[in-house]
Image 1 (cartoon, rainbow, N blue to C red):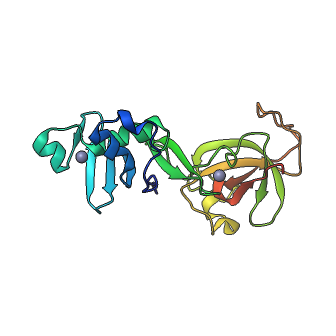
Image 2 (image 1 turned 180 degrees about the vertical axis):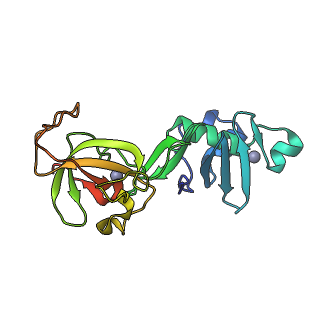
Length: 209
Ligand SMILES: [Zn+2]
Ligand SMILES: [Zn+2]
């Protein structure tokens, strides 16, 4: 999974007069923090040194912590960034939205592709087929993968379907109907409508704008 680090820049200093030196350095030095999962964070400091912080254990691989047993500026920086929402808390990692690149925090076990609120598909949403430009109404977003769901009578999977060749085989499938049928958020589908199945990445959410 592609994970993203926080920007390597100083943080805003609220009240520098009252901060002790390590706290101040934890804020004002350029450092970028990358959540690795399992409560581990990689901290790259301005001096190009990279250290590993285990937040739960309160440990860091830097000399200040290893030799002086200090709550070093790296541990502090990770804690500050989590508090301020710049870095995901333990159990989550930062990833980019598949469609817009916005950084979002997701469960560390989440699978790609990930989507921000604006691009997440839910039943009732309108989606655009990237292949044809057609608009469809989403009726189901599944956990099943395109390379596991068979369509038709040939035994081919969604991923093997010819027009899906350009889309990843290991993404979830989405069921959708033509044309704009009215579908309630609870996913009730009129029996006359045929549901077509697409790899998730082939559909793009159509947002009202
Ligand atoms: Zn450290
Ligand atoms: Zn997005």
